[in-house]
Image (cartoon, rainbow, N blue to C red; front, side, top):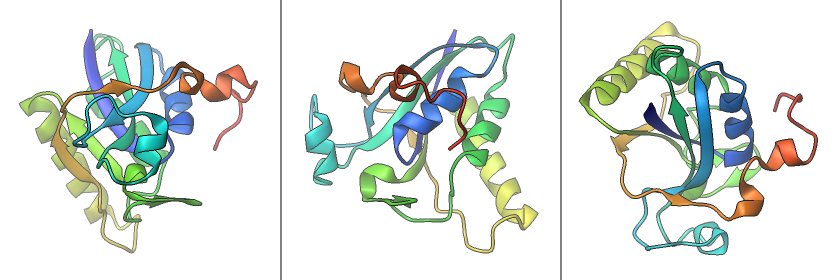
Length: 156
């Protein structure tokens, strides 16, 4: 199994999308990219910790490629809005790819460049691509939040 970590605004919707993918064996939502150790949701929402809301995806590369996961990431948020997704505003909602190795970094940078060159977006893509740091799992009530509320079949 391998891991991939993405920030695409609020972590509930993007987690749900990754859970639908054959080859994804587990997901967890949490916080990554900040300075505080063991942050809580309230800490992260303050915008003072530097963390992004992220989904950590565990996947079987024999069933789904990292490039396919990148495609799902790009399709399920707006990568041109700085520190914002829909009504959610703040650095914790930034578009981010946190890579776990050099191959993921190269694939992420290539996919970003290809998407920018495609002309799909009029504005520049602002997605940050940085090394994964310590992942802090969010509180239990955030895990599979939309599925727990019967919203797993809706598309955000």
